[in-house]
Image 1 (cartoon, helix red, strand yellow):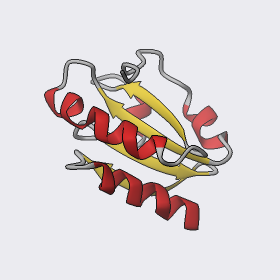
Image 2 (cartoon, one colour):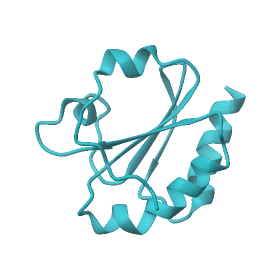
Image 3 (cartoon, helix red, strand yellow):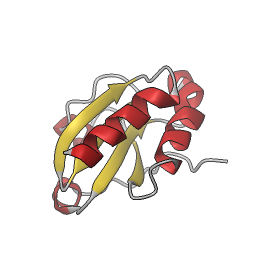
Image 4 (cartoon, one colour):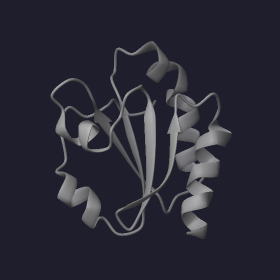
Length: 107
């Protein structure tokens, strides 16, 4: 079982200061698209153990999602040392997220 989206919003400065690879996963626990992609996203991140997986509940008035210009859920923003290197919106399978994480490893 994967963990739910966290309602606690990390500060953008903390995300920007995070060293290494981060899969910043925006969505909601009630979203059908998010639930459909949940296991694929989790499998891709599990295959890249050096990556941190941060699940953030998004929605109107949520500053972190707005700062990344998230429009659709789920959106996985892949960062390396605080810089965005890839983005996957509504992944159809785990390969899309795995490719984004691999891109971060090469960056």
